[in-house]
Length: 326
Image (cartoon, rainbow, N blue to C red; front, side, top):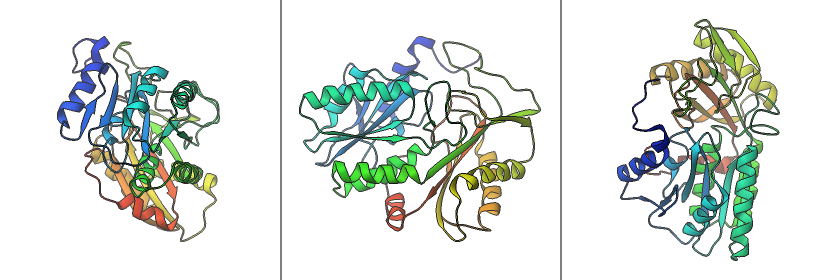
């Protein structure tokens, strides 16, 4: 294993220090925690997300005006503890309450729920939106039901814009649940991810193999096949998504092509133009993002997220924010 780091045990603390120092005009670390928060808070419902580290820029890269007010970072591929999440809730509550955006993993669900209960004992109103956009498998290593993956970032952006406009907790939870229902993601991996403290990939693929449906922690997918062209990969993933959506011609969609950590932008853009060749025959793609939004450390691979849009969501997605990660 070759990684640019110091001690594997210090990865989380040093990464957070670097994130904050690189963006010190807008974010700060809550003392004695692994929580990154927005420096100047508006009087609005605050949004918090988080989970295990290793998925950067998610979630700390999306902290700031118009998206998240705080991100709670766990150890690599490990859910943050309830006390850390609780401190995050307290740090950004401005009196209007908090909405938690939680990816559907058993540890995340349990720990965020415990933190919510602690905050409610303090009189803080807390709502929750659970994201389960991965259509690859129903049950997996870390979860019951579908996993929460890159589509979560669309939830951050839409709810962030709505919260900035003054929506209530109830309105944000309702909006978030509607977005999740119309949000679906599928992935393909070309290699496994190497956790720093482990030192070797969580799984291996031969030079000629790829695996569809792998999770962001390296959870097994649904099919291991022979490597093929970008166009063929796009076609297979879109066929899977089309079955999940049952879309009609001309419907408006947002698209996200997300690198899993070890895939160059060159390949991401090649894949994106192949995706568009297929989608443009049937759908009206009105918003797109290409880049690394929710990674799996150094995994080579890509995920494709589609969001069936309601008219007002386009304005939320296109509302300008200063986050470099977006």
